[in-house]
Length: 336
Image (cartoon, rainbow, N blue to C red):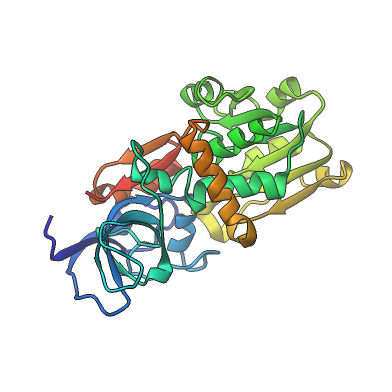
């Protein structure tokens, strides 16, 4: 790798449906000298998040990526050069680094993170990351608030957020049922994550399976998918239940024609509620979430599944990889 050049992934065309590799270009540019107050980060890993798909269209609900601009993404890496007080060469930082090998940023865009012996830096994007572990922690503790014995159902349960949310709910004493696609993921939920039960939506009726597994109804549904899965669970919610909207990956490829739930009247019939959130809606709880997640990781009390695609040239295929459901746990791309 040429240390004088920055390799980055840019948006070359807006996707009409799936964000395929031809929507992106991998380009190089000379690295410019640092200005006062800046740091240069050698990016080790970038996060692949479903929400990134919404940034690639003309009207997303996240920040939009302009044609020709670097793809926005959280990243983690080591400071290579610094002209900023309090940020030293060799320290590890996490933040909005973008999909590139050398990120020149203001320290306001990043935070220093602890390098954990024997753990990959990518853990700071997964179980310890804002869009993954922190999101799951806040969703469970601040929004869902399961009580012991509650039936807690989570969709995309073998994914980045769902796998952590289910484990946290289990720690709270809930009966956790995960929904995922395929026999491999279904087995992973019960055998590796310790969920009480799992449903393969590709081969089973979600509604009928839940009627069997939770005859008293679902108390909390932590949804990351939307669409037909949301409808299937709404049909079997218990009285005074809560539906927590964390994401809707089934809808991100067609944000101009989002399909809403057709079973929403179950909320009225069963005196239930639906509430959406993002982790940054609870700024006062973010540090608490980070601290507890770090404590669990250090104690070996949290399973942190991860899938790594190697090399920056793999990023153009990463979103397609995710939307096809091929990843188990957190999906990241290494930049080297």
